Length: 80
Image: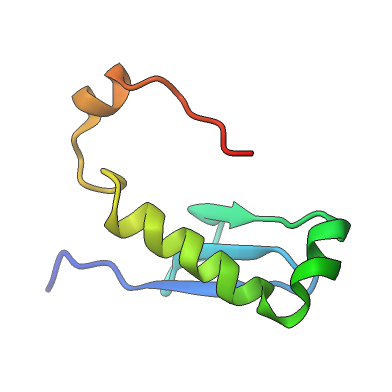
């Protein structure tokens, strides 16, 4: 059996976009909720924007690399 997790990006009925394991139920790993103003501005491309945000989080950061010691030393960041 492989240690590779299969993740899926899903847009829920309420408009929230979540990243979750494909084979597991329960709380998502990441969720993105756009404000009503953002939904109006993005219209149909909001799923693509959410997918790019998640892609960035997975491929360009230490997310899920298991390097908890380094992650604990980094200050939390807020994006506006």
